[in-house]
Amino acid sequence: MIPLTISGYSTALFATWYFVEELGLLLDAGDGVSAALLQKARKINHVFISHADRDHLTGLLQLNQLNARPGYPVIYYPRDCTSFPAMEAFSVKFDPHVSGTVWQPLIAPSATYIKDDVVVKAHRNGHVVVAPELMKSFGYTVTQVKQKLKPELLHLPGEDIKRLIQEHGREAVSIEVSQPLLGYSGDTPVEDWGLWDGIPVLIHEATFLESEGAIKEKPTAHKHSTLEQVLEMVANIKLEKLVLGHFSSRYSADVIDNRIRELCKHYGISIPVYRILPGVTQYDILNSYPVNR
Image (cartoon, rainbow, N blue to C red; front, side, top):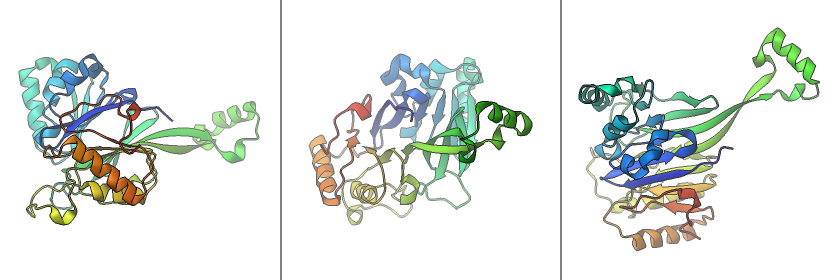
């Protein structure tokens, strides 16, 4: 499995982004991403935006201005978010050298290869309340896809395998094997637990610490997760590592960490749990010290 070096910043209302260095992948592009990554930002080839809230996309113009070259970066976004065509038109007019950037609308479910063996899938979520046919808010899963020899052919010598490929094509001797790598919730209420089951690393928002009943939101407001909802879900699915972010800045570091520890104990969660504190850029998150250890 591909090792993942993940860095990020995620504070509700202000900015969210996560950079996966080995994949040249950026998940959301909030304000400050280029300043935080500096020269590493030039490794970014693919940018997947979860939705059109400003705290998830205002870093795009600077990132693109510094990073654009023919065919890259490729910026993927939910098809029905009209902010992105407007940004594309403005950026080309303001910085003509970025005309090689690819702006790619997505529908869900969809699968996009960012490497020969790595695919990113878009999954519609309920953060933005719209009609079912509209695509305005996504989470993403990242999967490694490999071709392996069919089990019934393992006993054959190499020359026989080569002959079968020449006569019938490679698909006649191989099967596709998928290995999940990473899940990213974007902004969303906790919804489909099964979507994340079996993901080695899950990055999930946890905007509020309070229980669901304590959150006073308008019916038309965008929907978010609570920490307790996320950890209840995690206790009932299989993960290897959890990264929590998008906490409201109303909470201090001590309050967030103490609540995570309380809920991990309550739900019996033993996997490493990491968090991005409000106002903090965290580099190489998975090599930091888990808050529940």
